[in-house]
Amino acid sequence: MGDGLTSGPLERLFTGSAWAEGPVWVPSSQTVRWSDIPNNRIMEFDAATGVTKDYAVGVGFTNGRTLDADGSVVQCSHGGRRVERDHAGTVTELVDSFQGRRLNSPNDVVVARDSSVWFTDPPYGILPGTDQGYEGEQEYGGCYVFRFEPASDSLTAVITDLVYPNGLAFSPDESVLYVTDTAGPDRGVPLRIVAYDVRGGVCSPSGLTLELGEGHPADGLRVDVQGRIWTSAGNSIRVYSPSFQLLDTIEVPEKVSNLCFGGPDGQDLYITASTSLYRIRSTTRDAAARGTIAL
Ligand code: MG
Image (cartoon, rainbow, N blue to C red; front, side, top):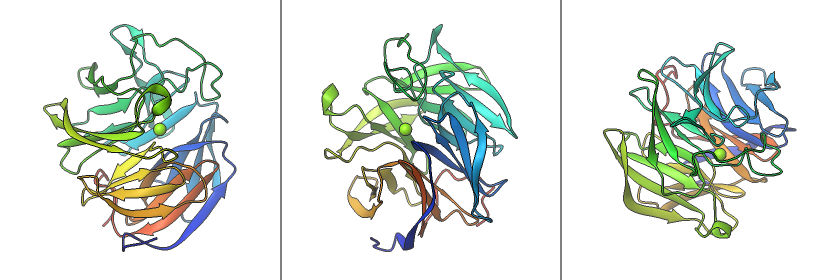
């Protein structure tokens, strides 16, 4: 592994989640927070002590999360079929419906610099037999990517042509939004990452799509300050250029769900993979990192 984008060993920091997802680095506590979705709990790894503990239990099957401009955690809730905000332990709803119909099961979320909240809404948390939420109907009839504007409490469907949109991340200048589609060949589409041009809060296909091979589904992804895309890809993380040329592969012993940059200087790459949390040192940091990360 390498090519200079990562160095040192891949460390397994914790194992014991049933399905680890949705990691975010929380600067105020110097911790990594993630979802153990089937066990309906949120876990937290303390980077200073190396201790992992439950942050909260009975949490409505949370999934992906990010930080807002205040450093509060914005997270997706399968069980609540909503996107919510955790401010110092107090959780409040941001949005749970589109045109009067409930959302499916919001999966992953990013906050843009204008404070708008962008999230994906596939049905994984409401499918029959799911252990990641509660069975339910798809009320609005699609699986969209949404843009929520807290100030005006308005929700707009910005991408409607993906089957199961999942992970998402902006390019450093927020002119491109990358979205993974985890539906796959069973649902008539390749496993893929699709790039959209973003202007004035509106998305249009850029024409750029990366098709990942069978066995390498991309779930969560992040973009670094150089614009490179770091995506989960089966039992690995792959790093791509903005034009989707493969730059590096980091092998991981378990199926990777998601990743985040963190640590005191923002350059530690934390990886949620099946039952475990891993860390490897990188040479870069997240393009969307908030000012709370010291450089
Ligand atoms: Mg996901």
